[in-house]
Length: 91
Image 1 (cartoon, helix red, strand yellow):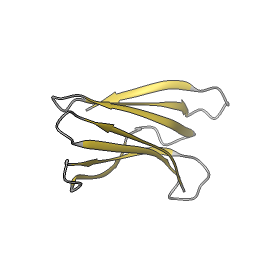
Image 2 (tube, one colour):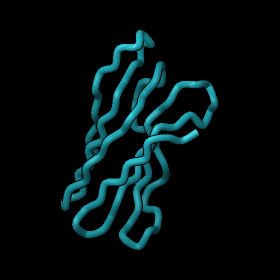
Image 3 (cartoon, helix red, strand yellow):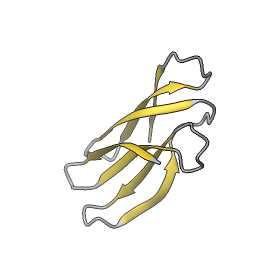
Image 4 (cartoon, one colour):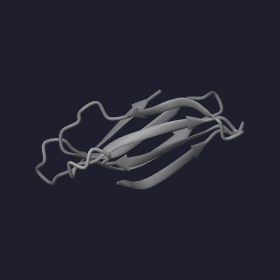
C-alpha cells in the first residue's frame, strides 16, 4: 500500500515524489522517494528515505530548490509508543 504522495519540483522542472510505503505488508510504513527529470524520465531508482525501519514513518513532506538540494521530512514513531517525532534528511 502506498499513501500520502507529495511532489516537490525545482524551477527547472525536475521533481521528486515521496510517499508512505507498506510494500512488504507488515502494517508499518516507510518513506520512499523517486526522482524524475522535467521530461518525466526517471533519473534515480526508488529509495527508502528513513534509515530506521522499526515502527511507522508517515506523512512525508518535501522541498527541492533550484540547485537540486532536496529535503524530506516525515512523522516518525520508530519506538512504537504512539508518540511521533519529526525527522528530516537532506540530499
